[in-house]
Image 1 (tube, helix red, strand yellow):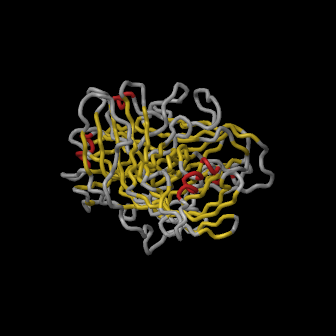
Image 2 (cartoon, helix red, strand yellow):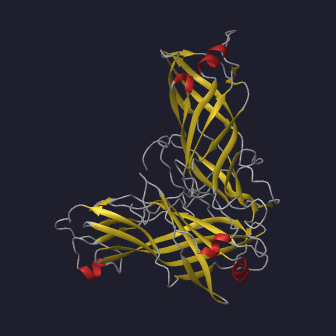
Amino acid sequence: MTVKTPVTAGRRSVRLASVAAAATLAGLLSGPGSAVGASDAVDAVAYDCQLPSGSGRVSMEVRADFPESGETGVPMSPQDVSITVALSGADLASLLPAGSTTVMSTATLDVEVAQNDLTAQAQWTDFAAPATPLGADEDVRLVHAGEVPSVTVGAAGDVTLTAGKLKLELRAVADGQATGAAPVVLPCERGAQESGLLATVPVTGDTAPGATPTTQPGGPGEDGGGRNDAITVTPRDEPAEDPANPCPVDPPVGEMDTGDAPKPAPGADLTVRDLPGAFPGCAFAVGMANVRKLNGAMIINDPAKNPALISVYANKRSSTRRAQQAGGSFNQFDSIGNLKLPDAESTFLAFGFQPVSARVEFENGPLTISTGTAIPHPPVRENFAVASFMQSLRLYDVKVNGVALDVGRNCRTAAPFKVVLRGDFEKDPKYLNVLQGGLLSGVVNIPEFSGCGSGGEDLDPLFTASISGPDNAISMNQGTTCIPIEPSTICPPSMPTMPGTNS
């Protein structure tokens, strides 16, 4: 997509920054966003919201991955969209019941789509922000994630997307439980001096002959009489509902291990808050694991074969430091989940020539997910997303060249090993927070095997020689997280694409 500053190449994130005053806010981020580089387009966007005490000023950021160009008759939509709203602690205190310790939020943004002399309205609805802790007189940033409708145009020319009205719904939480109070609804209007321009997409192609496109109410179809060059806005597909139970998994148990998360710069102590984790959710995570010695890969939690759900407590702990304190701003949110994955099937060429097939059982410990942002020296910004857990592998149903090989019932890695997966915010900045999910990758060192063989035959050296060793790559893609008691989240959870495939 063409933006106000040059784009270097490929797809990139385009952000709308908050007003200048909001740049000094400490903010509580539910997860990292795209790394800020010299070529990022930055615009100030301020909104006036109706508060009980009158009109209040908030700031909004939109971060998204837009297509660089479009074609007539082909739907297009931004991907990996987040809406961040910064509110002052004083305003929040006036809105929420006394004793509120956490706030959950949804955001709806009206977006005007315009081309030539036509306009249409696209609504980005029910973007959800996970539970965010509150502090006395602290400013808060609520990071909302969701999906957007697609836009199809019937003629060539630049298509602009412009932010319009914003609506926020805030739900208070005290001591880990919903307060029962009705959501606070904040209608917000873009500041009079703000353009609100999100991006511009150049579209090429011919006007569709004989087309009779449809539009949302109030779009060009009403004024244009079914013009062939009209703009069509197609709402996102709503996920099918499972009235029985969208998360049929047990809540996660165990302790979090945050030792692999980045350390903050030396300075003032962090403010650490342990949240009760009263909002269990679930998500799908699918991936690929390579075995370097075998020069092959196996699918983990195959989406085509009844994949398993992981369970998660989102934002169970927060560790924050304000920008004005020594060491600079630091925000980290820790979540815990489980990884009860189904067994995987693998087929490799052992030693480069011998076909071997086996089933692999994964024995995983608690999953810790840490996301956050550090700004030690503005404008230096370091985003991170780290997932870690302990794992053991057990092999069974092994066949060599189609002939069964009895490896016994306890052929496994001799000791558990640690799996650490990270988001790459230079190449693929897509894991914003636990609610939205995204891609995480890493490498593991598979230890030697023990207990392999039967009838006195020791097969440990065979599997150690053919499998064990360093630099075995793993990539996992997590879909959106469903929290059943929170209607703003996507339930049932979405199924992500396999790593290495196009969305």
